[in-house]
Image (cartoon, rainbow, N blue to C red; front, top):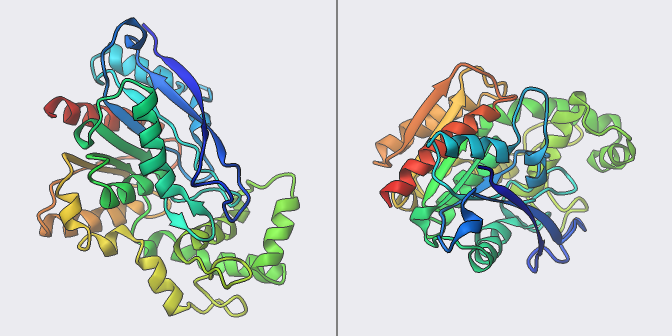
Length: 333
């Protein structure tokens, strides 16, 4: 038995007129489980958030020796590792590669788009079981970060949170890229000059450019500034690379490790908080997960942590574990 993927088209009111001129009409694949078309049964819902430079549609791509996400769900359901569920794959891609699923004056209201607009649309158009105990949000990397932030901010909406290698402890995962980013911007005269050159390139995904691209994308999410010509503030001086403490503090105000105490009450409302990471993560996210876990434990926040022997890349197989854990939480609802 196979599920069906519906290519839903979302005309977003909150993304209309966004600062970067990105599309407000978004294609959102929705996986409907095998039995969906054979009755009136209602289903729990999983929101799968893509990582940086990703989108929901990319989850349907076939690569060598791997499954599409729909095939993954079909297999897990057939083996009773996953409850039949609706899976929604949002598109929160931006001109700079991603939104981190937060509201920003430099990018747009992507948190509102997912947590309010998209959830309301899915509950209205599909046979869901509304409520936080039957609604999960999960993802890897920036998608894992988005899952964590949405869980922190909206426990009344998402009661199940699964974060695989999510961005946290910014000191380790972002700051090491700042000198490389500053070198790239200086080479082009400024960050604005780098952006102009980068957007003219036929090949924008060169790994040598990643520190510069990732840094400007994260700045657009964590330190927006409508008064700046860029629309955001960089966390370092463009001329020297010296860290700007005031801007860096604004970044840290988005770091799960630094804000876990502020959102402890919300996190305690979750029926599941699941975190996992590879022990060889190139962005040091396993360290961030361990720090977060220790702080969460001290605050009395129930959570499950797993480590696995792998890096940050090509670990989509860990989605199996998140879907299995979410299913267990649904069954307890």
